[in-house]
Image (cartoon, rainbow, N blue to C red; front, side):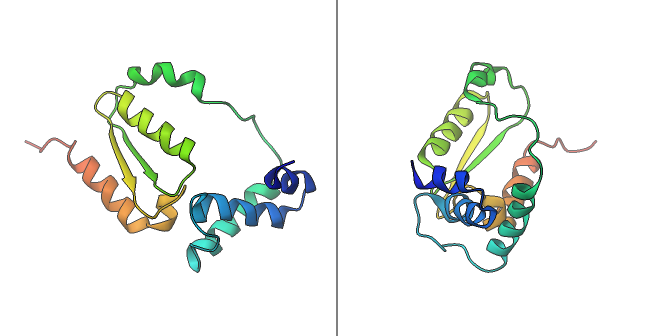
Length: 138
């Protein structure tokens, strides 16, 4: 049994939360504790709420829907971190390359949650993306 499966099977919410912070916030390709301070505190608080909440819905494998990406007809910005899981990076690149006119941005030294790690950069990136698509009035 892998360590993550063992932690999930234990039902220990605090251990699960710490594991999720390690994988999603620090990044699977970076060292533990890479992100500290208010960003880590916020992650642990928010994720702790989610982990302690009753389950709802079901996990859906998104890959079966990839054949429909070419049908997306809205401006699309895909952002991922270079410290995220390699399969997430691969999927992000695929989504950006497949949606017509999509823009893909890899952020250096960021894991799975770029908006939590670098909120100002993400806000600016989204603002610039939207501004390029707004037609001047009149």
